[in-house]
Structure formats: structure tokens, C-alpha cells
Length: 123
Image (cartoon, rainbow, N blue to C red):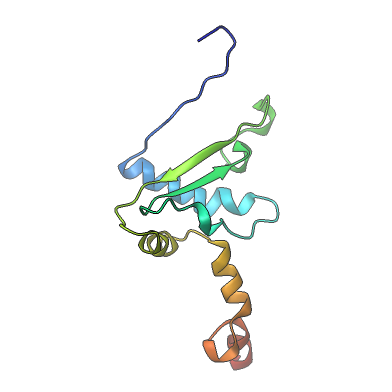
């Protein structure tokens, strides 16, 4: 390592801090992304783990924009006990992870499937 050379860091969150971070990511940070339409469902690794790249740390409300010298991106890997990608996706969906293909399914659901169009007709 040399002076002024960029380095990387890795942090593992468990327990209460992990759930708190995941909740802030899903409910506060991701919705602040401009033109956000959900996270891509292709971030699974085949073993039930999901990785999401965040290009800018300023999506978190705790980050003070006037103190940022430059934008820094990072990756979030969610390691689950699920054995398959389908199980992990189901788990993360139940926790509120907004997958982009779920939004497409809701938008294209027919009235007989109980989608938004069906609910509008019943009202």
C-alpha cells in the first residue's frame, strides 16, 4: 500500500444493526433514487444471496450533502439461509424489497387476476 492510494473496506452487519440497515435501505434510501422502478432481480448468485450495487451514498437521508467531497458507490450483499434464488427472492420480497419485475407484474395484471385494474373497477 502506498500513500494516497485508495483502499476498499468491508463491513458485516448482523442482528439488530443488520435489520435496521436493511429497513432503511428498503424504505428510505431506495425510494430516493431518481426514476426508481425497483431493484433488478438478476443480482442473485445461485446460492440464495443477493448483491445490489449503489452508485451514490447520498440516497441515505443521514448523509449530509454539503459534507460530501465526491460521490462514493458501494455494494450491498444480502446473505440468506435460502438454498435457491427463488427462496431468497421470496424472502426478500416478503421483507419489502422492491424488485423491478414485481412492479411490471402489477402493472400488467389483468382485472381477473386482481391487479390494480381489477381493484379500480370494483371501487
